[in-house]
Image (cartoon, rainbow, N blue to C red; front, side, top):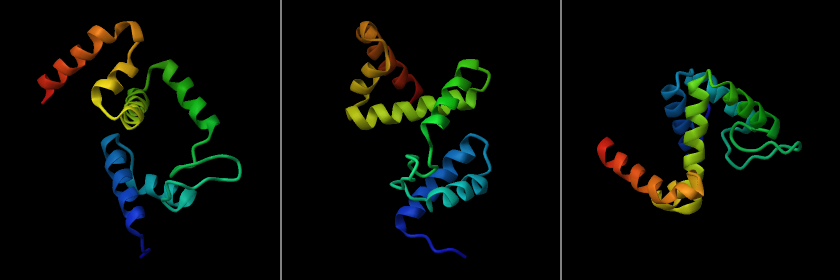
Length: 122
C-alpha cells in the first residue's frame, strides 16, 4: 500500500469527492492524478502542463470547444464551478466574485438577485 503525505491525502480526498459527485470512478481519477503528478498541486512538466492532472492549454481549449456543443452538462457544470472557485479565491467575497461573474452592466441587479437565491437555497 502506498504512503501519502498530508497534502497528497487532502488532494486524494478532494478528487474522490468531486469524481464521485460527477459520476466518475474515483479510483480512475486518482490513478490518473497519481501518474501525472503524484497528487502534487504544484507539479509542472517540461512542456508547461501543471497541476494535479497536468492540464495543458490544449486540454483546456478542448474543454471549451466541448462546452460550445452544450450537450454535456457535467462538463458545463464542472467548468462553471471551477470558475466560481477561481473568482472567490481571487476576489475573497461572494459579492465581489459574483460581480465579476456577470456582465459589468448587470452588476446592480445581478448580485442582489444571486444573494436572494442563495438565501432561498439555504
